[in-house]
Amino acid sequence: VAPSDVVLSKYGEAKYDNVVIFSSDIGDLADELTEFMNKGGNIIVATGNDITNSLRDFAESCGVEFDVDESNVIDHFSFSADFDHDKSHTAIISESAVSNSAILKTYATLPATQRKVLFKGLGHAVDEKNVLAVRVLRGNPTSYSANPKQSIDEYPENAGADTLLVSALQGRNNARLSFAGSLDMFSNAAYADEGNANEVFGRDLTAWTFGQAGVLRFRGVVHHKSDGSPPDVILHEKERPNDLPSSLYPDPEITRNSLVYRIKDELVFSMVVEEYMDGAWVPFVAQDMQLEFVMLDPHVRTTMQADPKTGKTVATFTAPDNYGIFKFRVLYRRPGYSIIHVEVPVSVRPYKHNEYDRYLFTAYPYYASSFSAMAAFLVFSIFFLFSSDKK
Image (cartoon, rainbow, N blue to C red; front, side):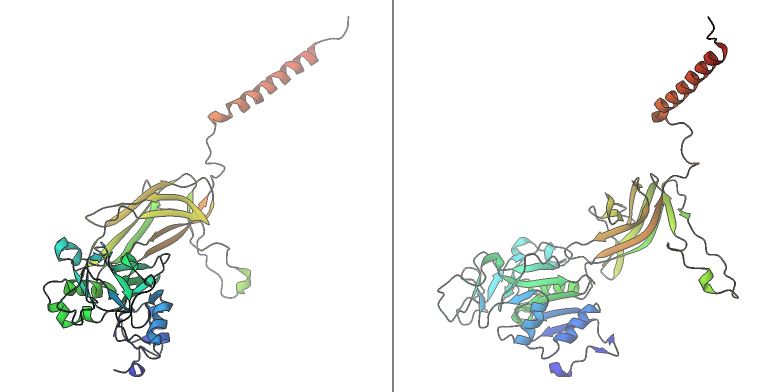
C-alpha cells in the first residue's frame, strides 16, 4: 500500500489501534502519525539502509536519530556466517538486550546462551536524557557503525554499547513506539534460524508495543481516616429557588461537597493496581510505588504497601500541620510499564476552637503566671484596703 493511500483517522477518530511500518519511506504521513500517537495509538517501525528523509524526520521528532546513509552496524567478532553473504560482517549477533521483563517477557526467561538476536541494518542513537526511551537492544562492545565499502579514517559515528539497534519509547499518554533499523531481523529466515532468538524477541517487542504487555491500571481509589470514618463535607448542595436570579447564589470558592480532613489526622489512602498479563488482569505488586500529599510541594511522601493476593496498595500517614487545599498524588513511571497517574483533591483544616484540649501541659507556666498575678493583686488589694498610713 502506498503511503498516500493510508488513512489513519476519519472525522477526528482513529481508525486503528496499532500501526506497523516495515518500510523505508512514509511519504507525507509524518503529521498523521504524530496525531495518531497523540491520540494514544501505538506504532512499530522497522527500516533499512535506504531510509528516506521523511522517515528520518519522523524518527527525529520522536527523539531517535538514525545513522548516516549507506552505513551499517558492523561486528568482526560476533556475526552470522549464514546471513553474511558479502563477507562484510554486517549480519551481527547481539546479546545486549535490556533485562526488562515488562518488555521482553519470554525472552528474559531464556538461558543466557540462547539470548542471541540477528541484526542486519542501520544503527541509531537516543539522547541519554530522554526519560521516555528504553534502549531495548544495543550493539556488542565490538560493534560499530560505518560504511563497509569505505575505509575508516576517523572514529565511527557510534561504537560499542552506544550503537542502538532497537529502541522503545512510551509517551506520557502511554502511546508506544518501537524503532528498529533492520527489516531482516523480522524476516522469515531470521525467525526460522534456530541459532538465534529473533522470533521470541520479535513477539515480545510487538506484544509490548501493541499494549499486550507491561500495561497497568488502577481502580477502587479510597481514602478515609485510620479509624474508618469518612472525611467531613465542608459544603452541602442547597436548593435554589427558580424564581430568583442565579447571581444571588454565587458559586463558592471551593469545590462543592469538598472532602475535609483535620490537621494531624491519621489518613489512609488505598487503590487496586492490576497488570494485563496473558489476556487477563492480575494483581500487580510494586515495592517502590509512592504516595505524595501535595500542596504546591509534597508535604508527605511515603511508600505504599501492596497485597500480592488482591493488588490493593495502601499508604497510612499523618496529615501535616498545615491547612489548605491538598491532593493525594500517585505518579508511578517505570521503564516498560504504562504510567499510573492518580490525583484526588481534598482540604485540610485547622482545629476548631472547641477541639483543643482544655488545659495544655506546655501552657502551665502561663497558667502559673496568671494565677500568681491574681494572687499578688489580691494581697495588694487587702493590704491597701486594710492598712493605715496613720502613725
